[in-house]
Length: 116
Image 1 (cartoon, rainbow, N blue to C red):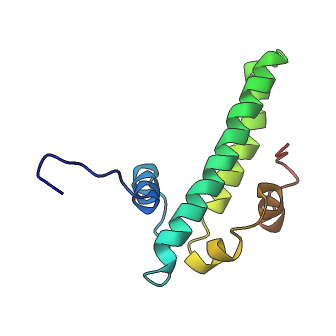
Image 2: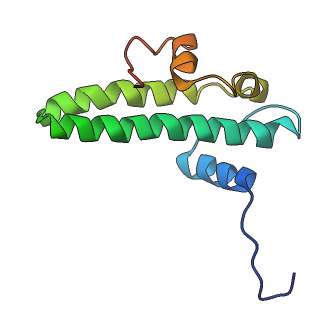
């Protein structure tokens, strides 16, 4: 690559950058596991983030007051915070095929969060 050329960051590099910007804890695993798990965690957190965005839009469409919207979103924020506590890379890799609903059920946040 010549001096003026730039390469696009890899998916792993982007996930690492996002984790760093958000202040997420480092994942612990082998040198191969860590970047893979970073991507998986990033994808799962993006999924729940999309649920949060969709839920907020639905609350606004339904005319809920700001306190109701905040309460609804607080459950999703709590689920995101709960998931970020899992720092073992293998844990994320083992759950890579899980649906978001199943993942949340496993960690005990599904009773407060609807993903559909």
